Length: 135
Image (cartoon, rainbow, N blue to C red; front, side, top):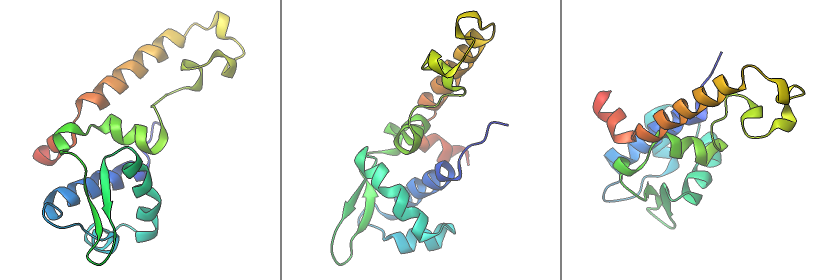
């Protein structure tokens, strides 16, 4: 079964919360966590990755918190996956044949490569603002 990690779902909810509530002032992790029923401890692990990829920015000091660094129209599902876990690969041999002992005779690799490209293309096209509109 192909599963989407919980941190991806949490991140989408965080970005949507920042879109709604942090246009003028940053939101604290505590507020984001409470409004979205996400453990604050978990958010503390996710946010540095999003900040490093310039998806969010932190504001220090009293009244500080997080804000979006760019519009949700410019942030794709792929950006989130890439920030939190790296490029999506459905099987490890897609990137490197050393993970497979039959790479030179594999009958299915081309199928997995094709499927992986389609998944990544879908993720790149799916912008977070569209999820908001569709939800």
